[in-house]
Image (cartoon, rainbow, N blue to C red; front, side, top):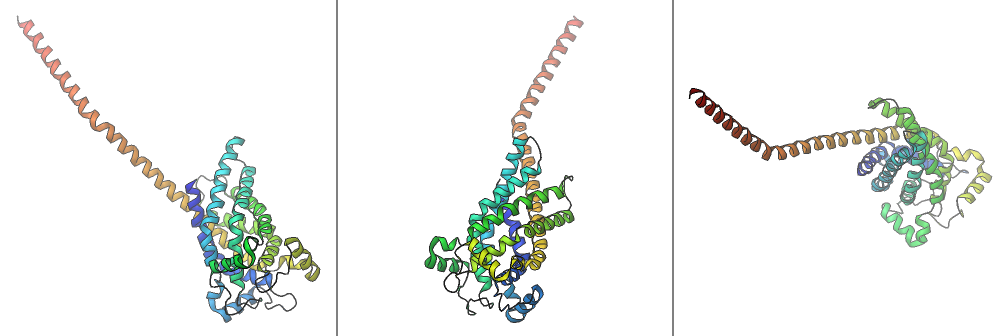
Length: 330
């Protein structure tokens, strides 16, 4: 189980570094003013951010997911791996259903850690971007952001957006792990290109299915960052946004999410798979060495003893042969 946790941490870091710029674009598009939109689309948002804020602007808020990724991804892959093995043992063999149920359980558990991390990430991504947060930077980092939210809104503020996060993560991770397993079945050791393809496709599918929930989650978490909250909750946010903008708002920023999902999840799964392989090979090597040491430890006292017995037997045989010879001569 410890191996699952560590591999998940490594994979999560790889995914964050690859996909964070597209996540920043996604959040900007999801939360911009629908009446006076600042960005015309994904590419326009990307170009505008690079021009006004440089490439560093694309990595705004990256410290938040990197700071939380050890816990979040360790929970995801640790809970998933443990649950999947127990479910398959109970079912008597490999099962896609076991992977889907284990993924859903992992999504539910990690939502608790993911919700505050994403709250800080969202607000850091928005500040200075023409989305209602001060250009000078209201927050100096993820910890400062959560501290300010805690002081002004308490625990409920820190976990703002938890329910839509949970509603997104459970089905997303069920589809995520089941589809990845389906695409990598059949090979004892899946080649790297197939790991990348399966991971990217699994991430893209899970995001497309749950994207509307993510839009609501982002709006709820951005709400109240600069003034009184506008929404009473996720369902109220959904009703108000549908009334003002129509159903199209549920897919705002989807193209940037798809662009981000494939490389991010390809990197995540490839990093997890290779970490597991390398550590398992190392564990096997250590086990072989331990066995060799154990054999040497047993051999050390046994070999001299066997040699002594052999020497005594040889002496006894020589003595018997000499006596027989003497008796024959007589």
